[in-house]
Length: 267
Image (cartoon, rainbow, N blue to C red; front, side):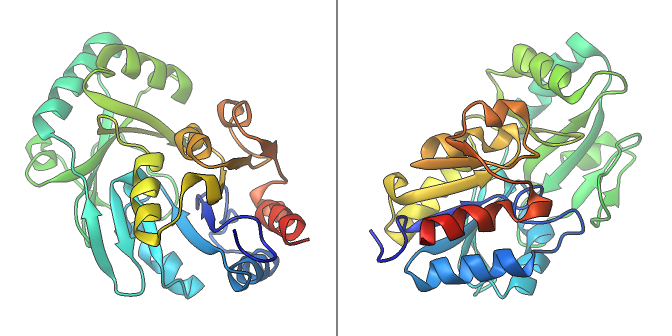
């Protein structure tokens, strides 16, 4: 245990958790994280975003440590701009999974995240991208499968996110992991992959155990991470599924929810 702070590792999701809606991190939260790290804890970002969509945020934070990206698929060394581990989706299994889901709910809108430090996000016709992150349009479905992928994103013209997740798990849960990462962000991942698997890999590299970890999140894809950590905190803006399993609920990402908890733990 650290002196002055009860945990050795602080795991934070990015969107809806550490980041405000304008993708910034408040000065109060930055100061609380700095105080906790000065007291001996390490801060680790654990995000659904793949490395290319995460790197600029980490660089802006002056973040030098490990980050878990791509929903647990990638362990990235921010200081060295180096990918340490990367898990890819079995494209044959993913194709079977997509066919099974579409057989149940009808045609889907698709996007996909290519593997690697500079892996593009490919976006197909009809897929509504959230935010202003860079993406490459594709027209021919064959382009989707032409290089290794971390994940596939699916959207449906009429089903809600929760309905789509439920249908996808029912149809293809034996082939892929289905995760809800944000509004309009339903993902198909390698079977068994979660933020908890990525975080446990990174924590092992840091010599830290789950018993020494506090974790913060806002969406159902954070459920495994909060379950892995000794203390799991959901933001006030979190999905009900995450609030139900959290050890506590803090203020929202817009209201310094992480800082409030860290300041309390710092005493």
